[in-house]
Image 1 (cartoon, rainbow, N blue to C red):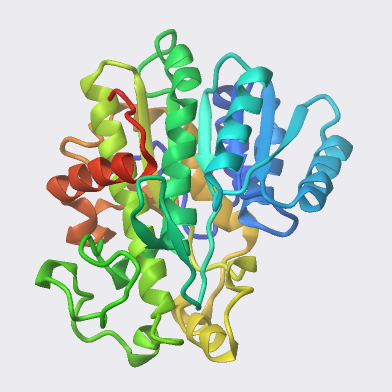
Image 2 (tube, rainbow, N blue to C red):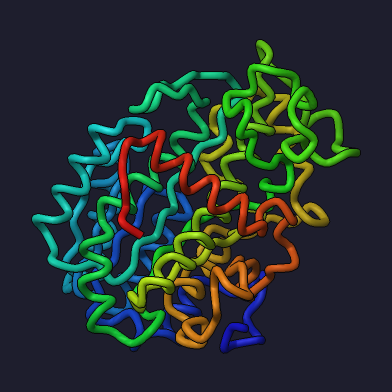
Length: 352
């Protein structure tokens, strides 16, 4: 469990950062998916307030990155902050970003895989091994999987010198994972949502608006599949890291219902669907949405957890909430299968 049971849905990232100031100071930290008025920028600003050694912000749009860097420089001029261009839809961009980071720092204490998209239309991507997936699955899962794998040497380097569980990888998932398991037989949703093996089908009774397709592609289902992958990947990564005695661990989390640029690609009907997902119509602020990320990254008590063993490692509202993860997102055999498939699709071997 987390060390502060009083933390909850209204806790802000600044409050968490202040409590865990000693855990942040002097750390090399990477955050992906950073732009103005986003969970990523709220996360970066809260961390910057407590004096990390190096803060690396990795995202696709240079102008947006520069705006956040300028704000951090203005408010916290003593913090070394660097922008790195990272397009998670491009294997070449991921390689370039990882290489640049390797030239900037010898080690990475915390990697926060914050970037993500929600797309209503089907865009097919061919992976390095020739597999075909939808763009959401590539950007939200395969891209971060590849990026993290390339940064493992820097994470393991400091992990070997640090106490158990201090060095961490954090995956931002969502309660949207409840919409779909991993469709191993049909990643790209070429078939009807129910025209797959039973264990790959969405749960019964979903509201019709979540099943809606545009040109045959159910965008919300695709999003759900990718968010399930975020949880499975973090848990399997933690299991393998523990098995190899690395002292490094991983967590996944739901940041909460927050109105962000994630919905910018949706049409009017899609936006109305999202508007109906906020509990009792209440939306978190960006600062409240970033709070759970900081708990996952810095709460020292979480280091005691057996993530990938008896614990899934899924957080929500600043607390451990494994019970809120769907069974398909907690299944160890599914997690191992996804890992193997992800390595194959990206043409890599992590060595874990």
